[in-house]
Amino acid sequence: MLLVGDIGGTKTKLAIFSSRDELHATPLREATYPSAIYPDLATLVRHFLAQSHVSVDRAIFGVAGPVLAGRAKITNLPWMMDEGELQKALDIPSVRLLNDLDAMAHAVPFLEARDLCTLNAGRPERNGTLAVIAPGTGLGEAFLTWNGTRYQAHPSEGGHTDFAPTTLPELELLRYLLGRFEHVSYELVCSGMGLPNVYAYFKEVAAIDEPAWLSEQIASVEDCTPVIIKAALDRERRCDLAVAALNMFAAILGAEAGNLALKVLATGGVYLGGGIPPRILPFLQDEQFMRAFKHKGRFSKLLAEVPVHVVLNPRLALLGAAYRGFTEDEAAQ
Image 1 (cartoon, rainbow, N blue to C red):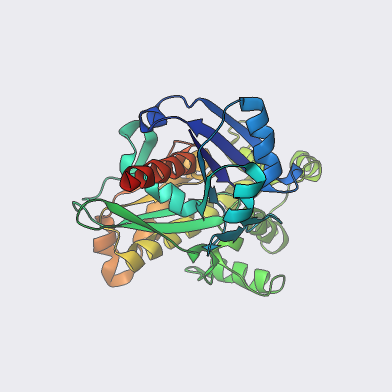
Image 2 (cartoon, rainbow, N blue to C red):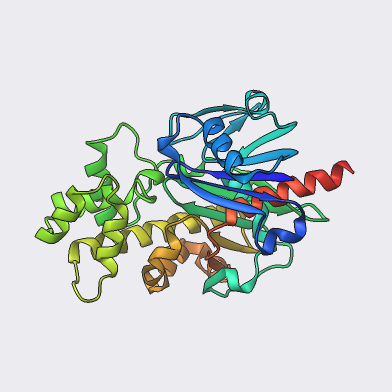
């Protein structure tokens, strides 16, 4: 029995699989929990296992943050995790931690057509490098290289690199945010926690009016990102402020996805994971996303050949962690 988890700053998904054959079907048990209401991962997992009535042999958790020497801290949550401590606390013989983008990357080679929405068909190179960029609560990045037999995943913390504006309005956004933050990364403008910053810029600097109904909704919630997205997609009650924020968000995501493609030479394709891309598909399907993706001077032609896909499967990291767990088990045998 393999316990797998997608541990994020906002929510945690857990599932139990008994074999690799279940990965495209229904696991023995699966549940999603709000992360912040639990003091630590062990408490959350114990709650899940108590409801599952299943004894697990090993566990592997994809966590939103760097994993070093078997230890990790959730980037946007005050949880410290240690493989050895979790093993003892949960009484599970084997516990592994891996970066959540590392987990997502492991699932990418196994995605099916139904899991994807293609933004650019391109011309994929056989066994070419694959890139993954995932705006969720934060912004994660990873890539996969072909080792002659299979794809090998490589995590990174590329979402925390310096934000580089490509237009005058984006430059003004950077000026605005430098007055509020010591360091302005891509995550601060291109993630669930970053969208409110872009929205605030258009409200406070560009001076686009905020409708009273939207002000009331934002004031009534702790996380205003879903509210902004919903307002931008509302056809009956158009909100210019929310639309402006999502347009810039999509352009910045396109530019950074193009940056990642260049850095790792992702001739096999770029995959947009995370919770946000499927929710803002109309903005990603608009020409501004791909225009920003390809706007790389002498390398624009190369990027026009790179396939770009939005991952629609919400269980990407969960499945990736399971693939990693079963692959290691097969290798050990």
